[in-house]
Amino acid sequence: MLMLVTLKRIHGWVRLPVQAYRNYKNERNTYGMKDSMMTDSEQREVRRVTDADYDDVMSIRSSVYDGYDYLPFQFKSLINHPDNEGYATILNGKFVAFCLVSKVDGGETMVTRAGRINKQFEGHGIYKALKSFIKQRQCNGTVCYHAYIATNTNHLISAAISRGELAVLEKKNTVFYNPEHDLRALIEVMGSPKYSRIMSPTDMEDIFQSNEACTKLFPAARIMCNIVPYRLKKSNIPLIFSDLTLLVGTYDSEWQLVTCGSYSKCEKGHVYELYVYGNSCFMSEHVIIHLNYILKYCHSGLELLLHYNENQVRAFGTEMKKCQFIELKGSWKSEYLLENKLK
Image (tube, rainbow, N blue to C red; front, side):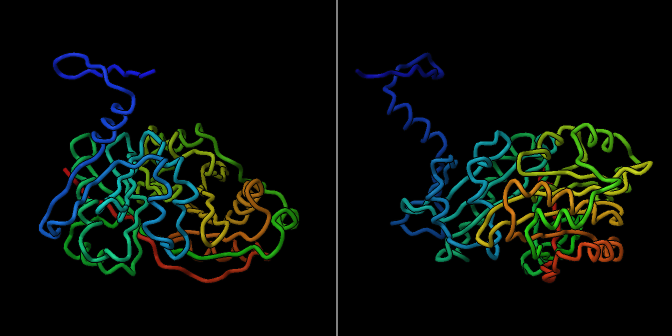
């Protein structure tokens, strides 16, 4: 039996077979591209990605971000989130580039949070063209800003900063730690927190409503969680809290310290990223709570990536020495939060 789908067009309703309707939907999400870099025999298109495109997107490049690529682990949840959009460049039927953006701050900010380009096509302007295409589409709506995270080793970022095209909002140092023993045994040795606890969305609302607390904890007027920068807006709170994130706070007559942790599994193994905000004198208590949370994902073989700023260095180092069974593996590249105005 032929199944039909009712479809509305400008001049009335039409009836299409189901397969024709599916093709129609795909066409609406596919955009042809032609430029001076392409030969007559090449056909390039940009298409909105769905979770069914997982294998094609992963085939673009096998290893990115020095083995810390969380996209394979979170791909389906990211692609299916209503505030996220992923696009791929397809050249002669083959996926060659991919970029995923999230809309935060009530739709005002577009955050580039994942991307890759086939090594064979690096330097051909394909990924740059894909990002420009996405920016143009997003600017037709409510998006006013573009934000992303970069490292200080990227010469393109340095050049953009020197041209004044980007605003450097915050610099974070990143260090690696590695728990030597079974996490459960490690937590028992470290003891119980006295002043720190898991935070709730209501706690974050209280902080965001306090100018004094926001200024003290978040001098850059942003909070990073799961590698996404958020302005201190109430509308962002449901986005900050998720199944893979945990926020811990220390309250001692006032909010002293907030840490945002996010778990992922990647080529390196089990990874937990922790962003530190405020007085890091309570850092060891926060580590205990976060490690206890990680137990539901793994018991050993964990790598901790801790991000903190220059003002927290001294107290941070002292506190982490209390975590005597967590070995410091070394520093990583400094991380910058960059943003530019689109309109």
